[in-house]
Image (cartoon, rainbow, N blue to C red):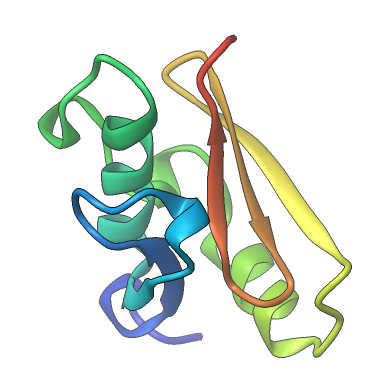
Length: 95
């Protein structure tokens, strides 16, 4: 299993709406923190590393599995965070 900083997922670029279609590969911890901060009133500093909320091995298995339809959802500071098989991170801010 790679160190958390070596596992990359896709997150919307800073300041860009996800609907713009622009995404950037980022280390999983950075991507989750930024996605939660972008979708809520939290700052990235309020969010612990992803492994505090989910087993990083599960994310690695998901993104290495090749099934873009598969997903993994976990809770970060009261918000549902979903990573799909393509490595895209989304946050439901309404929790």
